[in-house]
Length: 266
Image 1 (cartoon, rainbow, N blue to C red):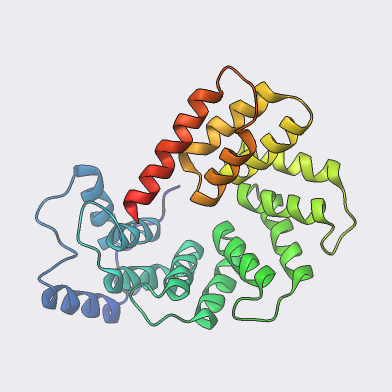
Image 2 (image 1 turned 135 degrees about the horizontal axis):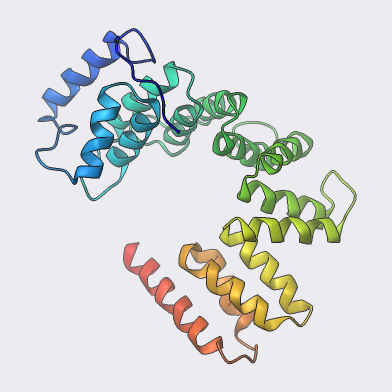
């Protein structure tokens, strides 16, 4: 998707105030946000961000948060997110929410995270809606509200968001604020898996294994492992350790390599 070129500093959220703040900050920090040399595709993102493209402002902010291209600079990343958020760009509000949630470049504030996730959700950003739903479900920064969380996950599912499908499936599987419906849960796990969510892939594989469809389950676990977090890797290892299948050895090797990599990064 292409976003309009912003010719004027008063359009698209690229305000004079933020540009000056960013420029002064860059000078104090030895111009961290203007590296001498970048790969052409990354430099193209930076140039479009400077011209006011909201998508690239968010992408450049993410690069400043954590990448191999420039030193981490979360404070400046937040400035870029604010530029795009001022223009009403949902993904920028989601990233501001994440910054406040984790304390990246700012003082941690769950209340401010909720504010920005809510704005992102109102702007139909799937990730902002999902993050708001997680906080609502767990009661982080607010009283726990499962009915409201269910609605948010349902909206995300209708928009095709894979992770929302996986959590909504859990609501149906456990009977949280709705009648238990195992068939509906499995359908949602499968849809989540097909859209690439590793938790959905794991949960769908568990059901397949329980039904005796080991070969198909193994295929989904193999897809899940490369992106899975440590908790899911350990769950897959525990569940599959007693299974008999020709590809189990390869799966175990994949899991152990990922676990080892995870430990090395901590």
